[in-house]
Image (cartoon, rainbow, N blue to C red; front, side, top):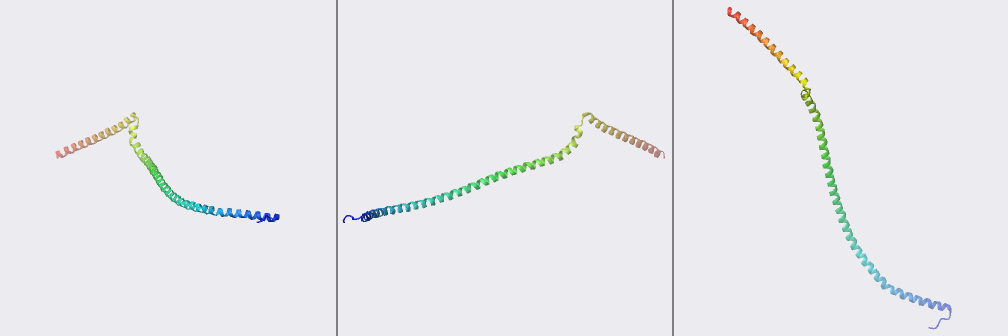
Length: 161
């Protein structure tokens, strides 16, 4: 080919040369793009496999967490129930102790009151009991003596007849 005669021709020749280089570069990129696509497909397959493994592990972890949470809740509920039962038992025992103590306390107070009085007052009570017993004995002796006299007088009258 002859040399370009005008600037325009020179620019066209240079542009054609640039386009030829560009075409060669694009043709060289095609195998590289094919390799990149293949590598991306392989990476996508590996990621899918790893993702399914991750999903299985996540599901197993969630199930394990649920199981442990349920066990924890059951244990804490059992502890709370035991504490509640203990508190109720103590409250019932205290209520029974108070009720029994009040009832028994009043009865014991009246029963033990004479024993708790001072000694000098105890002798007054015993002296009162002794005086009542002596008075009863004297009355009984008097009555029996009167009966004996009346019986003797009655026997004397019946023997004479």
